[in-house]
Structure formats: structure tokens, C-alpha cells
Amino acid sequence: MQAYIAWKDFLNNDALKSVLSMLTDDRTRQIKDNRRYIGVLVDVLKFTCTHRLAQRGHDESEGNCNAGNFLDLLQLIGRHDETVAQRLVVVPQNAKYTSNEIQNELIGVMAKLVQNTIAGGELDPHLTQCGLGRNLPPYQAAS
Image 1 (cartoon, rainbow, N blue to C red):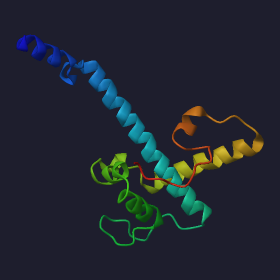
Image 2: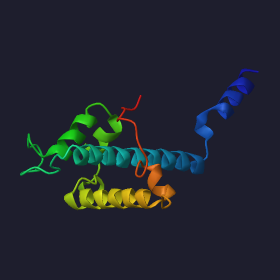
Image 3: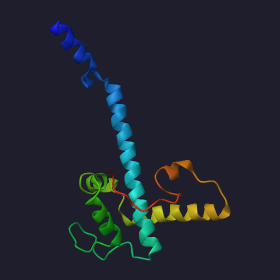
Image 4: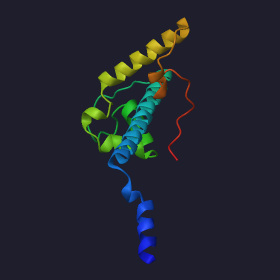
């Protein structure tokens, strides 16, 4: 009888999850984290743009105490948000999306969205999923 109970417990355990479902769960989490991170980048850019603050500093090298408003705000948010902190430390340099080219591209996309909104055009649903094109509440750290 104990063997039967142990076998039933084993069947109910998450250890038997299929590889496909584990990969799907991981991919879903990764997409959610990516959208959250891009949303934070957009929020920081919105903040610096609406307050007419310079995005970049004179020296944006690693460890500089004044790397510019954009990077400094991301560092500040990273102290309170694990997803952002991981992105700024763990991922490769080209996946951080903090370069001035990416900043300019995101600002350009935000400008197009403002123009479309003023002109009464439709918003791309893919852009609204990551925070572009909608009125977001002030930034809130993940709970």
C-alpha cells in the first residue's frame, strides 16, 4: 500500500511535467520579463523627455558615478526591481537596450505614436503590450 501511495505522489509531482510544458513556461516568463523591461525603458525615456532632462552623460562607462540621467534612473529602478537589476548586470551588452541608438529609436517610436494619436490613427497592439502608446500609471516595482 505504501508503494502505491508513493507512486501516486510521484505522478502528482511536477517532476513529470513534460519538457515542452517546461520550455513553454520558461518562454512565457521570458516574454513577460522582456515586456516589463522594455516598459521600464519606455517609462524612463518618457520621464526624461517630459522633464526635459538630458538622456546621456559625458562618460557612460561602467562604474561611472554620473553616467547620465537615463542610465542612472535605470540603476535606481534596478535597486528596487529584480527584473531590471538582472537585465543590467547579467545579460550581454547588446541585450540591455541602453545604447543611445536604441534610446533614439524608442523616442522615435513614441513620437510616431503621439502623431498617430493626434491624427486619430489606430495604435499597433504589439506596441501597447510593452507600454508604448498608452497612458501608464507611475512606475511600480514588481511585488
